[in-house]
Amino acid sequence: EVQLVESGGGLAQAGGSLRLSCAASGFTFDDYVIGWFRQAPGKEREGVSAISSSDGSTYYANSVKGRFTISSDNAKTTVYLQMNSLKPDDTAVYYCAARWGVITHTPVPSFYDYWGKGTLVTVSS
Image 1 (tube, helix red, strand yellow):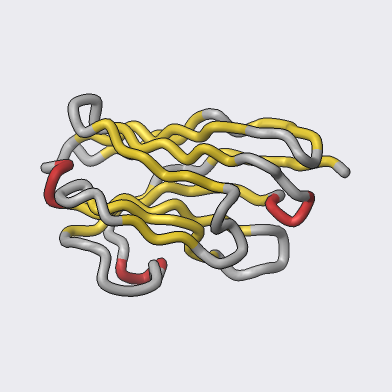
Image 2 (cartoon, one colour; image 1 turned 30 degrees about the vertical axis):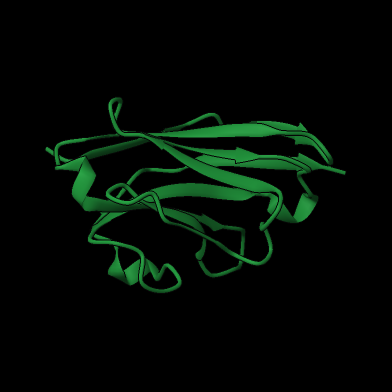
């Protein structure tokens, strides 16, 4: 059974940091791209960052570039999203998702096969 379990969300002040984790199981981790998406109330789900487990290539949305860092521990089949210099606009439910292959374009939610249930990140001003 495929499982993606997010953790690490919570409340942070503007300028603060949080680290999200996505623990994956039930599929060949090394063959997949793991993406982080977020969805704020009333907004569409957007791709924040992604990493190819096979070659380590990464993607960042412009809105988080320089503030967020994605990394992967293939031995633990876990992907992390280190979020620094948080802003109130980062408030959203954050989801991790998986799709087979490598990063070739901006993460598109419909291209991802497996999803976690999400973790809420709230950034206060």
